[in-house]
Length: 170
Image (cartoon, rainbow, N blue to C red; front, side, top):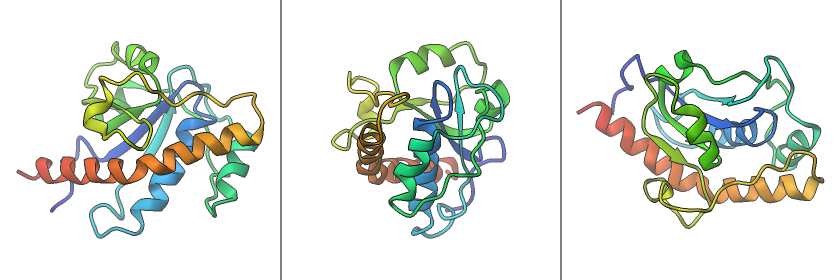
């Protein structure tokens, strides 16, 4: 497997404010990819929000939920989803159907997949009604539950990304 074409070089997670779910997913996937051979190991993972401001840190509970499993997202700063980010994404994983609708106005958006509960592979996700709820404003246990749902989905996402990379080279 070689690296993806230059126009699609990273995985992007999207939520609303880019301060809870998508930075948590970014940190979790980045951590998981380190255990895989190249090109997965060095594949960049990013996150953005459909209604994000620039430069906001992840929420304290998002930081705590990941810190408790050994992942530090303290350097994260929010950014809005842009056409340029979409154009350079190998794939964009969203948290809810509303995020799909919010991204439809962007040109050059690659195939979208909902990042969902562990029993659904990403290819089936678009037809599912299950979504990752926003823990914003809730207690730490809501963030930990959100994190655990994402952790369970990571193997299916890694498989999906590996397949995308393999297809990009053929």
